[in-house]
Image (cartoon, rainbow over all chains, first blue to last red; front, side):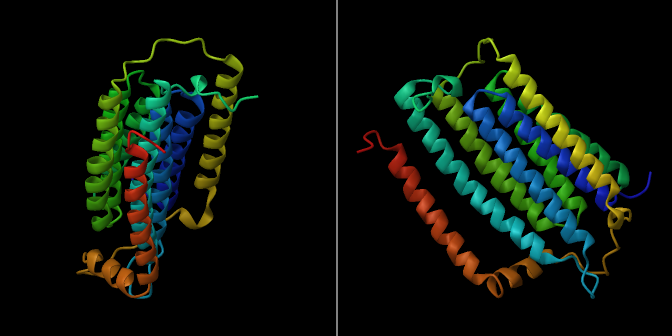
Length: 108
Length: 167
């Protein structure tokens, strides 16, 4: 078994993205949907880090621009989780449910 | 890093990510998500991104997951009772996901530039913190300030949203 190639990392990252999307599409609990979103964000981070490592500069170092982007993504994702969970708590206070099919006031 | 470790951690990450989706209890899902993020941090380390591996453990497996568990306990969620699922919606979601996974797998495996292992790093190249820090505080200092404003706005927004009276 040889060292993992860029394609291996991209495959793993794509599968992680698909699992996260399955969580968003198939589950009806809003917290699990939120966890699926986190999985998709992390899948994107993994492919960014993989591209950064395989795209070496003239000095032979990884391309650190990709890693800086991942740093920013992690920061934004942390802020997004805090705001999203606050919205879920506010919603729960109003409706006593986290089930998306019970939240249909805007549904025609 | 030994090549076998990559496959062990990748398999662990995908397995526990699948458990997040499959578990009925939200607490079990959140704990599976922690393990999945830890395995992802190990994959970052296998790509010589030590700084991001540490950040991943601190921010995701630490702070974010504590927040998730805290909210689950606060809302006192039980494992959801089995509801009647809409078979059309469920089958449609499964079909879309399987199609996406198939397309991504086909594209990722046929990418012609990607059939090589990572080039070896020169000796003493483990100081990625220094390189990332230099980039953040020189080329990316404006985005850093914007991110700071975003985090401040998010903090204020969370406090406003969490107050008992919204108006």
